Image (tube, rainbow, N blue to C red; front, side, top):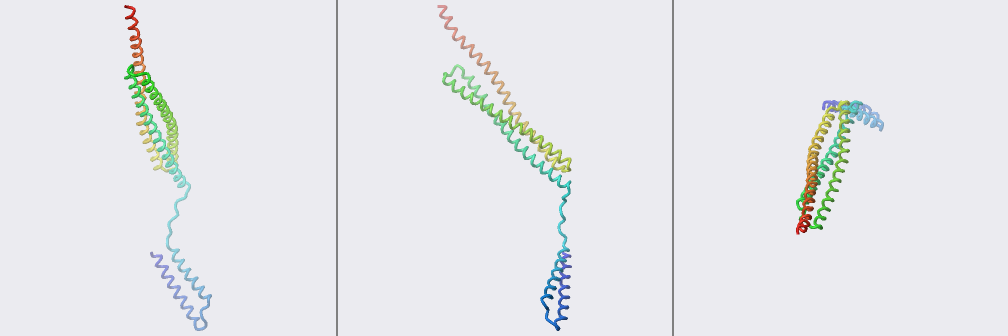
Length: 234
């Protein structure tokens, strides 16, 4: 504000001085075009000088260190985004796998509970459903493995970015990246617990299936042998 005030006073002084100079020559001759040009030039110079006194915003730091820190921050942001996307995909895959396994276990238990009570057609229908569900479980398991490989790569990339940010002086970006890594790992561990629990139940169901099928086969053999023994006694 003070600079603008000084510029205005300077402009007023130049204008008054110019009028005095021109008034002295008014009795001899009229002002020429050159005089008007000079007056306009002096006025513009005065205005320019006043504006130049106004302080401009200081140019931002563009040193090598500053640019490297900015680049490191961008890298950590990108790697964190990559990690969050792969984490979400892996968690969803693990949850869907767990659901598929629990459905398969329920179908197998239902089949075992109805052994000897089904017609051949009903038994064949249930087996087709079980086979289809087993294929779905396998597909979900393959998807989990695929996303897990991508997720592990994302964790490594984020760790590298965090280390680079720390070395370059971008401590805040480094801390944020490492926090994101710990959060992603804890979330994946919780989802992996669900899938491990599902695998445990599936293994138990397989053992139960083998035992139940063996008992059913033994009882079927006994039922077939009883009439023969009865006929021999006759």
